[in-house]
Amino acid sequence: MNVNVAKDRLDQTISLVREGYAFIPNRLHSQHLDVYETKLLGQRIALIGGEEGANLFYDSSRMKRNGALPKPVLKTLFGEGGVHTKDGAAHAHRKQLFMSLMTPDALRRLSNLTTAYWEEYAMKWEKQRKVVLYDESRELLCQVACDWAGIPLGKKEVEQRTEDLSKMIDGFSALGPKHIESRRARNRSEKWIRSIIEDVRANKLETREGSAIHEMAFHLDENGDRLDTEIAAVELLNVIRPLVAISKFLAFGAKAYADYPETREKTKESDEYILRFAQEVRRYYPFAPFLGAKVKHDFTWQGYTFRENQLVMIDLFGTNHDPRLWENPDQFDPDRFKDWKGGLFDLIPQGGGDYYDGHRCPGEWPTIEVLKASFGYLSRKIDYKVPKQDHSYSLSKMPALPKSGMILKKVRRK
Image 1: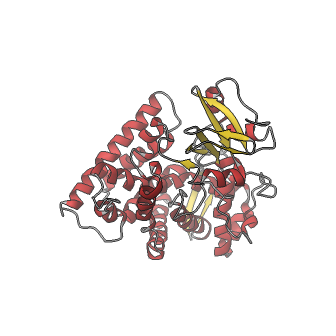
Image 2: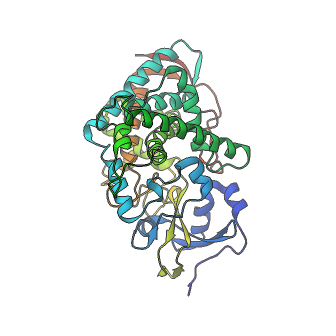
Image 3: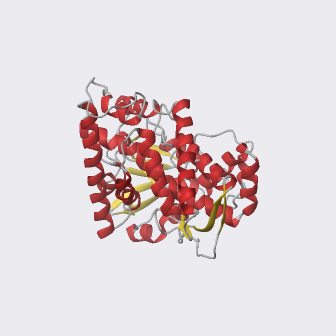
């Protein structure tokens, strides 16, 4: 029996499209529980949020991932058969593959690569009247990602590969032609990566042990078999695609520097502050709106009965703005992370839980390294002007982005 849990009686699919990131918070905040039942595409769905809701969402004894992601999302953003769709021993085995890439040396190399590419691009920007940081950083990060992963990428390929990876990221929530183009971009990207993996396996391309391309090409699954080429391609894209998506955080970080100029001054002086700034950008600005799971078996939580195979959506954006977890959550304040100990279920822009035993995104560590290197470069290594522009953003657009993409002028290296 459901006790005092509010429900949407009518289908709310149009409301989801209209409200975007605010869809789940708008409903959860209407009551004092962390669960609300809605209806999307004719299906009854449980919406959960907050620290306790995140803890529940990542409880593998109650939730599963297989079958939770809708086809439109698999066909664009994540790919079919990847780690996001696994549970139990199969998930743990595949997750270890990703975590094996996150060694201190590998992350240090990623940071150094990021700085090197910023320097290359800054030299180019000095000759340009203006640059759109979001567009430039997408391309920059595509090269960083491929270089770090060991994927060969010719200069003539950069624009096409950047566009395809970006379309995969932007098209998951789109309808009509934009969604169709996102699917085509994934098909092109998977074909590209499959051919490279085939070359690696045929000894036509030398790879470095420990690199993402080497590990994906030669990884053995839980049964001792190599991954199908198609699955290996999906997983390798799951390494490089999220790095390109960081360009959205970079645009928001540049916006924060413009809106709160004292933060840029502080990042010049302190590596510790750069980390605080990066974490606050990840908390404050919209990135992933929500994630989905399915219920393993019937159980009751906060007076609500979850039914077997029911879809559950966790509110990522709302949890990052939960006043029970964050003091003055709608204020941008990097110093809130000064003494932060790092919880599993409070800061969840890319998901929560444990890295090794749960479904927390393994790309969080690379994200933080790239952001630290990037924000450090923007504050310490170049000067620039921010002309008048509309860098507002809408929570109804998923994924969100400053409207101008953050235009910079008069870029000069120091």
